[in-house]
Image (cartoon, rainbow, N blue to C red; front, side):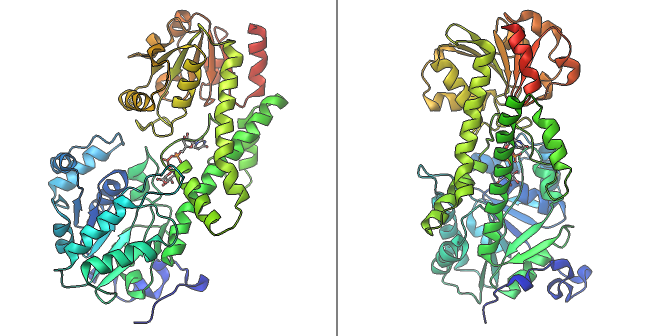
Length: 482
Ligand code: UGA
């Protein structure tokens, strides 16, 4: 079969292409779906397909996770996940199985949703997905009938074709007649995982054969979203370009916020005006202490590594992570300006997750803030409504010096008691009222709002001094305090 190489002219919406219109939708049988790896992405994908009425089989190598999922339980702190999981498991639409063999036997389209963590040099660690592909390949040996394996994990361009396909072909003994390999990146954000999976803004598939494009069009026919068909490399690059672009928007906004502070203006008002230009758009223009989370930094670093390997010089991409680190250092300066020399001072840090709405602390700016503050001799009192346990583990693993000066408190009012300054690192709704009773408990009534989340009804109250990151109009209040 001649390879199908999509060119720009072939990048089309599957809905309107001959690919999906060769048979009436109602009579097509939807393929059975297999999911290998049931972490964030795998579980969300499984739930999304099951909710849309497809039959899904899922496997993860962690026994405990399989047992929990089978009984409809998950510890993912994602809105709606537990209810949907119980429902689709109860309806028999999602079955959790104990081996790759069951996935290979029962599913026609198999999604690989295995982690690709960051290595010390910035590149991604392919070992989990390589092992998964080997296991799946072995299981496919005995299978008769066409199988399409789809890489959903985030992998640098070329990985699906150059690494995953040869592994699958070698370990299964099948070639392209019986085995298709495709890429289909995800764009799920934590906290909105179910919404993103059920109502995606686009579906991007990377295929090397027409037949596989048809199979995926059928898999996704119940999802209403523009569908873009590219080569596997093209689809893989869409994922990196998207995350790098979003990360650069945040880093850019943060640089503007530093200028805004100096100019005595409020970055929010500036960026709101900027974002009204429809060519720019309004989202991802909020200043903060620097982006965190498991994806932005990891993906930007991996892309930079990859591009440098090509001997290209991606100046913009290279600047994103250092610019983000500058912003976190800027947050240190802001705290310092609010509290003076840190030795002997007490800082209440409110919000430990990398953003509100999740218990995920990966790359959270809370960790560098804690390390910096204890390094300077401060006492730190921490609170988070959901991420406390994860942060405790992260802090333990970080071997930060001075952790004996760190205390976790069960409520915000206890955290701010006796504090010289309260710092809002994640904008949990719990903090936004900042009641007078909290202010009365503080040694000094000063808040540094790194997310600019406190509403005017609080900041204009007069019983506290509020320094907002990116808001030059809030700095005179601090000077008055001094
Ligand atoms: C991100 C992308 O948004 C998803 O589309 C992508 O699928 C995902 O990575 C991934 O690759 O798995 P996520 O890491 O959950 O999702 O978080 P975001 O909501 O995008 O926020 C990332 C960081 O940027 C957070 O620390 C957030 O506080 C910060 N941010 C975001 C800002 O500081 N300002 C903004 O305007 C937006």
